[in-house]
Length: 158
Image (cartoon, helix red, strand yellow):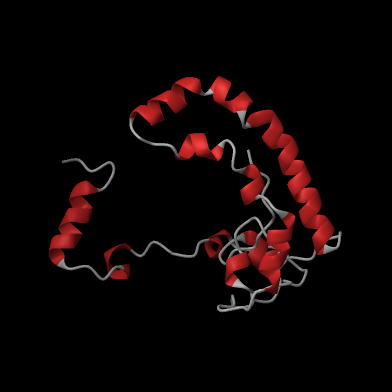
C-alpha cells in the first residue's frame, strides 16, 4: 500500500486542467512522492504528515504482518534467489523520510519540466494521451522489425 502525491504529468488531465501554479519544475520531483503543486501545510509539515500516515499503513500491512500473510509467496521467491520482496517488508524507514524528501527540493535542478499549456476547464479526451497511435507511419522501423511486430502482435491470427 502506498499513498501517492498528486503529480501532474504531461499528457494527463491534471497537467492540462490544474489551475494552481506548479511549485517545482525539477524533473526528479515528478515521482508521486514529492509535492510539485502547492500544499496547504508548509512543506516540512506536509512531508512529516505524509510519512506518518504511510507509517500507519506500513505497520498494518508490512513487516511481520505481511510476512505471515505472504509466507508462501516469499518462500517461492526465496527458492528462486529473489530477495527484493522480503527486504521491502522492512525498508520503510530508509525509503520514507521527510528530511530526505525536503532535501530533494534543495538540490540543484539539472532538468526542468516544460510548463503546461494554459489551464482548461474541460479537455478533449484525444489530448490525454502522450503518444497517439499512428500505425506504421508513426514508427521508423525497417521491414524485418515491422514483420516481427506484426507477427507477435497480441491477438494476431497466426
